[in-house]
Image (cartoon, rainbow, N blue to C red; front, side):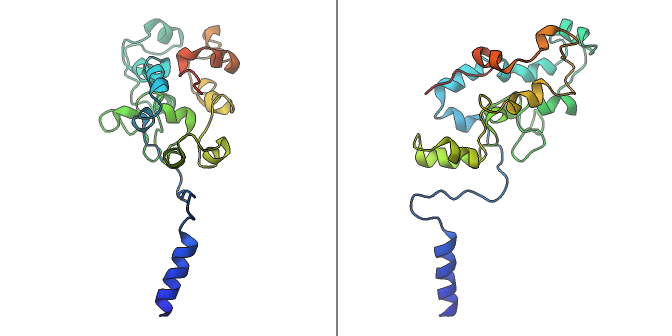
Length: 192
C-alpha cells in the first residue's frame, strides 16, 4: 500500500496539470528546419531563397573566388570541414542534434531556423500544443531566440573574430543589425 501511495504522490507531483506543458530539464537540442516548415510555410519559402540557406555552399572550392582572395583565403580550398567556418555556416555545429558533417546531417548545413531562433526541441512542444496561443515569454523561457530583439543572435557570427570577412577587408562586411533587419534577403520576412 505504501508503494502505491508513493507512486500516486510521485505522479501527482511530477506530471503537469491539465493544459501545462512539460519541458525537459535537459538542454534543448536541434531538430532541424523540417519541423518548422510544416507550420511556417511562408517563412520557410523565404528562407530557402535567402543567403542564410545557401551560406554553406560558400565554403566549397571555387565559390566567391574574388572575395576569398581579397580576404587572403585560398579560393581552391574546401572549407566545408573547417571548424572556424562550420560554427557559423551550419546549424548547431557540435551541439546535440546539430551539424555533424554533410553526409550525416545535410539538413543542418547552412544557417537554418534554429541558428537564429535557438535549438527547437523544447519551444516546439509549446508551439505544437498552443499553436498561436503562446506568449513570447513562454517560448523564450524554453530557449526560443529572436534576432530582431537580441543583437547577439546575429553578431555572434557576423562580428566574430574568426570571420575572415571583416570590414578591414571590405567595408561591405560592416555589420549593421538595423539595416540587415530591413533587408529580408538574409533570412525571412516577419509574418504576423
